[in-house]
Image (cartoon, rainbow, N blue to C red; front, side, top):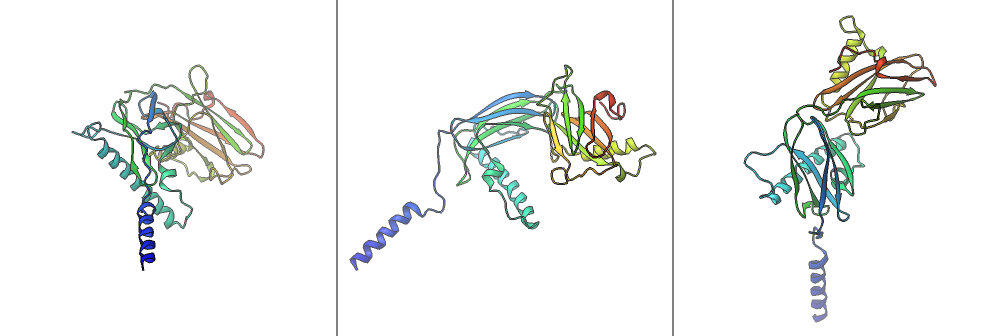
Length: 293
């Protein structure tokens, strides 16, 4: 009996040590560093890094009325983390409904790791924002360490002046945002889309207007669109772009910068044959005068 009691006590002690439902993972020494690189009318570019390997949350939002995150940092971090986790659950639920079962866990889907450079886009001009970051325990999904927060006012007008050059080579198309000096701009957000002209019916007798308004409706929510930076290359093979170039078809590609409002909306036309190669410059933009700011 004494032996059985000893074994029971040993098992109970072991469980108290190792059978906790959530293992503790705390490291109060983790710090996140933020560096603001670019502030414009509709986007902010920022770099993030940590002093040691750790997961962390980054976000931006308009200030709350009568609330100071610096005096209520623990509550603020928990609310921000709860919001991010709610978004993750909705995303996961939609995938499960579509019978997609290979779903990334919350940490790898919604949290950052290591050093990154990030663009917050779809912002409003001349508007106050809180930009913040803090470490997160990936096992307990709790905030740890200190809140890093900076108050930012976006510019009232766009700081960038770009045009877009465009190239089609074989099954690939390439986009080049160019500044006034002819240099490629790597930190200006833009959106692009391509469509087969055979899918248009014509708008007010003007196919360019039809194509242009179609493109603008595609860009109506840039936050949910595929925002690009620098040189973009896309293979049109129905896997990456959901569009396959077909022999003898005519295509239009619409490109627009997005910096609080659409900038330098351009529309290009090309007739595709196997192995074709075209290079378009801004002077060849067929929609010039229609949609540019």
